[in-house]
Image 1 (cartoon, rainbow, N blue to C red):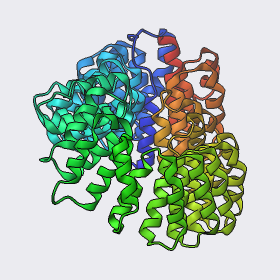
Image 2 (cartoon, helix red, strand yellow):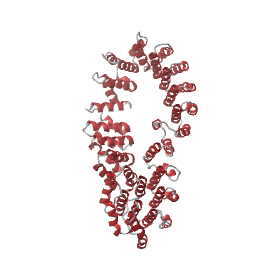
Image 3 (cartoon, one colour):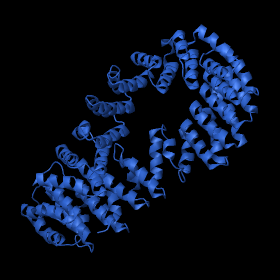
Amino acid sequence: MSRSRFVFCLIALLAMTVAGSAWAEVPEELAEEMRPLVEAGLASQDVAVQSWAIRAAALLDDEMMDTVEAGLENLNAPVRIAAATALLRAGESERDALAQLTTEMTDGDAATRTLILERLLPTLDEDDAVTIVDGVLDATTDADIVRTVVGYLARRSDGELYDLLERAPTQPDELRALYIDAVTRAERPEGVAIAAELLDSSDAAIRLEGAEIAFALNTVEARGLLEDLLDSSDAALAQRAGFHLAQYGNASALNLVRDLALNTEMDEALRMDAMAMLRDNGPQLISYEELQTLRDEEGRTPAFRTRVHELMGATQDPAAIEYLREMMNGLFADERLDGISGMGYSGQISAVEEMRATLSSNSEQSLRLRSAEALGNLGDETAVQALAQQLQTERVMEVKVAIIEALASTGSAAAAQPIANEFARQENETAVAGLRALRALGDASIAPQIETVAIAFRDPAVRWEAVVTLTHLDPELGRIRLLQALDRPPEGFRADLEGLPEDLLNEVDERLLTHSDTAVREAALFRVLGRADGGYAVLRPLLDAQGSPDVRRSAISVVTATRNLEDAPLFESLSGEADRALRLQGFAALAELGDPEREEFFHGYTNHADVALRLIAAWAILNLHAD
């Protein structure tokens, strides 16, 4: 059997709802009418026909249950799964049926697993679904299977199914990493419980993994878990938690970071990171005297000393400011560089003029670059003016880029227009730097000028950057340009869209579902299927559109799973579909809806030339009376 036909068989049978009702005897006259069709289907060599015949047999009478149970031993997976789901629905041999579905998950291929997870599990009683998934996770160490299952649970499941992820601490390292990755990627609030479970472990590596989940979630509750780690005997864990919480002004975390900065036994890079955190979030916690001691440590790199001087400036201690001013006028380039850097964090607007003079002079380029950066850190309007004036006449590309980045650092609305003026030069480097700077500034008033870049700039990479920047600044204005640009998106384009409004990202994926590139289409479909509604809102309009068959098949599956009678006309329209696989799937979806208004419609197909359609119609009619 071909892969596409196998997938169809699975999709067709997995759409059924198996939970909640036991088998009920259909009228004898109807059973006798349908029996020849069912028996002929059971004898068929067509897997799809056999699958529907098994399901119909379970509805005829209890004498057929032996035949249905025998289906668990069939050579074909779709028939075995049909038998198992039919038995669960009838409340017969449930233990064997659940065991069979567990086996199909562990021994079947990726398509089988995905379809059972996405289409069958949501229709089961929670206890049955938990039994299957728990059995799969117990039975296998295959990384691909575990990745698929825990990824599904993290994205789509709730209740006891989601709680199965709390197995993570007991898993071997390579499998536990899959649990952590799935929960972290999903970024759902429920992940806090998983993080707490991991943090309760006595194993330091496992506790760090729990912390990683909390870092990613970054909710108030997650940060509460991290606060408990500040006193941990595990130094690495305490440090990670301290750095994370310090940026939110947590006093205990800032004090921990301060101690790291002052600890001469710590790694230099770690101490530099600690100083940067203090510089930006708590410079008042460290004194000028302590910083002098740091400055005088022997064997430290120039970068370390620069960071010390930045922190000195941030303290705004008068003695530190006087010292940094002297450094700016020192005899050696290194001390001048550090003096400029320190004054850039001092808030001393009086330093602007000297920085401006250095930036516009023929000084060493390193001094000019450092002056631009320092002006950006000062952020005053006079600093913006100094940067903007120099940008107009600057000819050294590296310095121009540094000035543009510095203008963005000021955070001033007045910085936007000088940056935008540079686009007319058609210079790729400054254009890209300018667009990223404007995105950082967040000034939507400049959006029309960015739109011009998106339309008219020579280089396509710059045009794409302009589209992204425009859309971030003004989603309504950028929407059309972005959707147009998706015809030929650059590699890795999705990362550029992070942070856009959710409704626009949804629209992006809707557009990509019709893309000519299969890989782009499949990636969009994966994201859509991971939504809370399983992708229903997006995929329903594509069910009978002239799009790619793979998207339409997924659309039929998703819409079927909702069991909304209002969707019946959509499925009925597929009965005339030229593609047989889509035609059969749509017909099966209509049967699954159980719409009493369609009984006569199905009677009209009991003599159809396509045997599979006859069996689906027979099952649909029997199902209406059995329920």
